[in-house]
Image (cartoon, rainbow, N blue to C red; front, side):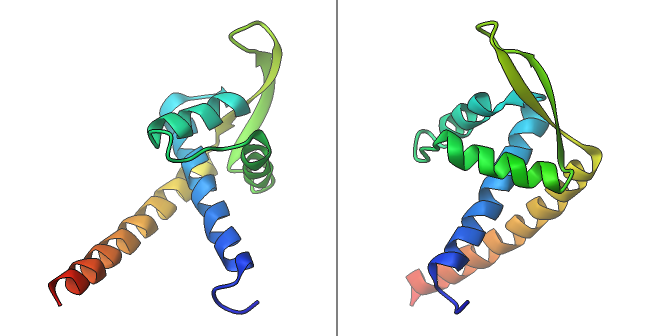
Length: 118
């Protein structure tokens, strides 16, 4: 696929959402999908609006990679819900991705700062 296509953007967005899900689970502990989506929206100050399908697609990717695990439990309103928790390999991946994002953010800050000074 050529650079700049919708597929490239989707890959970046998937990776970003996966990182946000991992961080949410690391911070809050086991959560159900709805709780994860609401927490990400809350932390983004509602800049991000996530539908359940998007979050569940991320959860399925993370389960396949064994970066999270799932178990059944009762939600706050006593309904049966699937709860997701980060695994040891998920924590390692989160650390790698966090380091990556820090480097990228530094590069972007330098590039944008340079552009503003020009």
